[in-house]
Amino acid sequence: MSSLVSIRNLTKTYQRGPEQVAVLHGLDLEIPKGDFVALMGPSGSGKTTLLNLIGGLDVPTSGEIEIEGERLDRMSAGQLSHWRSQHVGFVFQFYNLMPMLTAQRNVELPLLLTNLGGAQRKRNAEIALTLVGLKERLGHKPNELSGGQQQRVAIARAIVSDPTLLICDEPTGDLDRHSAEEILELLQLLNREHGKTIVMVTHDPKAAEYATHTLHLDKGTLVEQVRRVA
Image 1 (cartoon, rainbow, N blue to C red):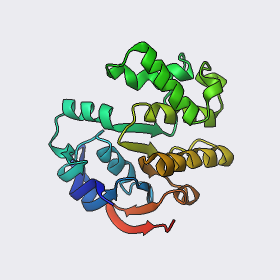
Image 2 (image 1 turned 90 degrees about the vertical axis):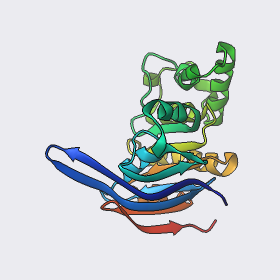
Image 3 (image 1 turned 30 degrees about the vertical axis):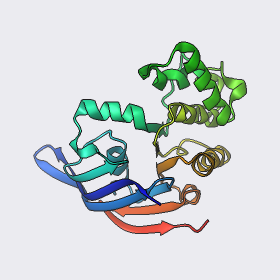
């Protein structure tokens, strides 16, 4: 299986007042295409920092990040923004939906950055919402949907532009167990049936069981990798 993400000697240091805080320390990592990775570790271990670097939301202090042959660490802010719009779908803990827009309109938002016409944007949004099981909720606004349904809308928005990579930051952290399991089953479906490569930060060991591959970080260092046998 070929690597989608290649990370070599990655470091990330933040300046906080007079001191420098090192978050990631010379990390090396390969993520194969079609993998479903769960990133785990205690608070402050560097999980979200690593997720943001893979998603092109931040830049490393040193080291290399290569995704499908493109070096993110060499890109300008403008190039990273364009790269994200073309290659990454984001799913966050608190959905980040626009409250005044319907589910369909929320899902259409990433397509406004493309050259697609209005009719095609609408059609693509309908397909994405159907895929996540919300065909009957196209015209509903977020406050008319449950938490689990809102997260499904967020996942539809993340996949509507057919991204290379899905980045999920605690996607079940605000959901009850039943809704969380439904969302994890949906992510697993997107991975297994639609070939989506997924990188997910989670604190929940039960959520990590849905992934094919678990990475454990501690104090900015990769301490363990676990691959599940299908």
